[in-house]
Length: 297
Image (tube, rainbow, N blue to C red; front, top):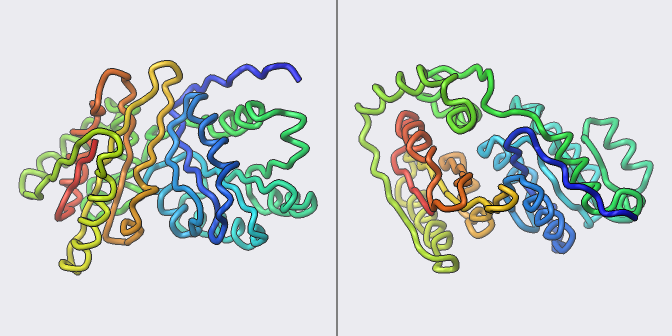
């Protein structure tokens, strides 16, 4: 097999990667998410043993174009159909689902899942015919659709803390700021009436930032049952590929809560530790009225 050329995305692609619930087999998804990142995509990695609820909510909050997951635990039919249905129910049927499970997912099951609405089930035969990079190219090409463009979001949507609208507006601020500049200006005036504290947390890799935030979130939710919080997390983009690993969620177990919104941002410039769109994300979180905002980099 000849070396596959790497697909070059036309848009900033964001992919949520995970292994399914009750599945500790994460070797395959770890390999795939590294290739996805090296191919120029921004990867929000959740790790193994993740529920449909966690994966779907992450994809919505992160305004991802697609979900890529592995399932070796035998419950792939129910798991993937439930995921598809939940995305439809939440008004996010545009988010595509890709999956693989080696020989666990039978060919007739793959056909049934794809007929149901799953974008693609990759089989061992696909791996032999397409190669790893070929499968990633296929996934990226099918996911290469713009986000934050021609969005139908109003200031009222933001004030009501609609997570879908918040996610779309942050993407628009990143990708098409001129298009939503009037809306950002409108909510900036509203923001001045709200004084939500912003807690900044920084440190070297492995210092324990994500673990600290997880504990803060846990105690905040326990001690303030009526309050809500937002987390904005920034990770660096790779200089060569432009891809990024946005992996802070993998160590945060308390954030899967309706009172917590989290958005991961890539710097999209290799020499910076902050995204230049952090201020816009913070502005949107302030306007939404979150009681505490955590900024982590």
